[in-house]
Length: 346
Image (cartoon, rainbow, N blue to C red; front, top):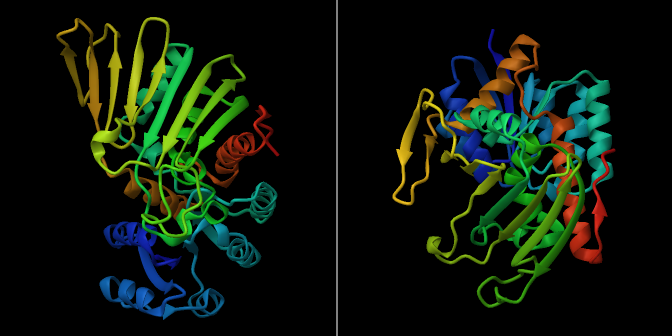
């Protein structure tokens, strides 16, 4: 018998999961879709299994009895759903950030673990085809400095434009880059941040009150330093070339998430999937390009973990995702106070 899967939240990220569910149809049975807008849940049903559509997730859980649930709702409405799933001992996958409130995230984490649940967070970049090569580069070449940037535009969702409901770009979007920096380099010790506003006007983005851009300086526990620059002011892709640069003493790796990993200065033969190069400026290296659907692999890994009862292949469970949340919340606190902030894990 196939494991039963339900989805709460049928917006853009829910649609992202839906495509993966359809691709994994030989492993799972879709039993319910829930959204406050019934027509969206009904659309998901028509496009996939024809299973029931709901506006009440408690009723859906009562009637469908899923083995696992994917939560794809905005971060400001987290908590109630998770505790209901925990009460019913239903495994769950949740989108990032896991919450906007540290205390809430810790309570959910502890309750889920006490219930023995398998959890995962949607840090799909950890499942990129070249991500292990990047981690190995950082393990073999001690990193001194990281330059992390993500510049984009303002997403269309109304809740995103308000910092109180999205957490701002650093916490809600650039959390993917922050998470990989954590995973590659190690845990942060102290952060200090500046933010700026006024470049994006209320006329072009009604209701907008979040940061146009921010810069954070990070000192890691191992002594490495980083800058994390992020902004949503971009109106054209030529505005900036977003990437993460991991700099060692005699080499570097440049990561463009879900796109490519380029290693400069390493005198080595390209591994499978890599392309060696020699640039006109004399630099040499290897470039690895994305070969897989990382989101599909992320969802597949969680689903297989529930089916087998073995969560060891999950690369970001709820506990680990809380650490990335605490990192980004510390950055936001530094923006608000104008003071350095210690990153303390609960």
